[in-house]
Length: 212
Image (cartoon, rainbow, N blue to C red; front, top):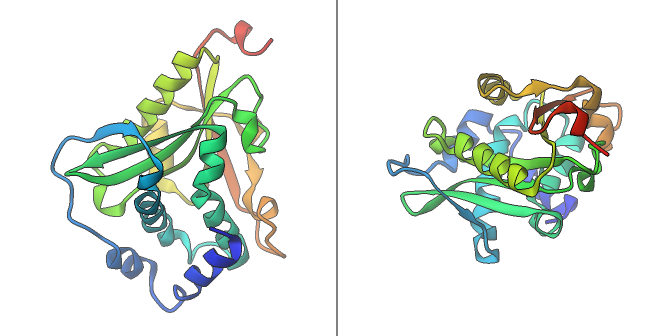
C-alpha cells in the first residue's frame, strides 16, 4: 500500500471520532487462548485490517502528513517480510494481532546497531486487548531474538501510546533515550510538532558482549 493509497483511506476519518472509527471495525471479543504462528501471504489482507483497526485511533492525535506515511510504513508487509519474520496471533480462528521480527535491527533505518534484533509494527485489534495478545507477540519476538543469539532486543513506541508504554514498563523493558527519534521529522511532516518515538530494549547477553 502506497502513501497515497493510505492518504485516501485516511481521508474519510476526520469527521468521525477515533473511538467511533475503531468501533466501526470491531469484531467479536476472543475467548480462546491466543495461538502464535508464522504469517503467510494469504494472511496479509487480514493483517492489514488489524493494523488499521489498531492504529486508526491515533489519526486525530498527529498531523495527517505524518500519520499517512506512518501508517503506510506499518502496512508495508512486503518490506517487513523481506527483512524479517512476520508473526500473527489468532484467537477464535481469527487474526487478532501482528508483529514483525527483524533479526538485524539496523534494517529498519531507525538508528539501531546491526548486531541487535528488533520488533516492528506490533498491532492488536481493539477488541482483542486485555486477552494476552500483545504479551504473546512480545514473547514470540523475544524468543526469536534469543534464538538468533543477539545481545539486545529493542523496539520503538510512540509517546502517545500510553497503554503500550505502561505494558513495556510492566514487562521490565528498559528505556534507551539515546535511540529516540522524532517521528514527525522522520515521516516528512511539514511544520508538524515533534513526536517522540521512544526506544525500549532488553539486554539478552552481558553488556561486554553487546556488540563486537
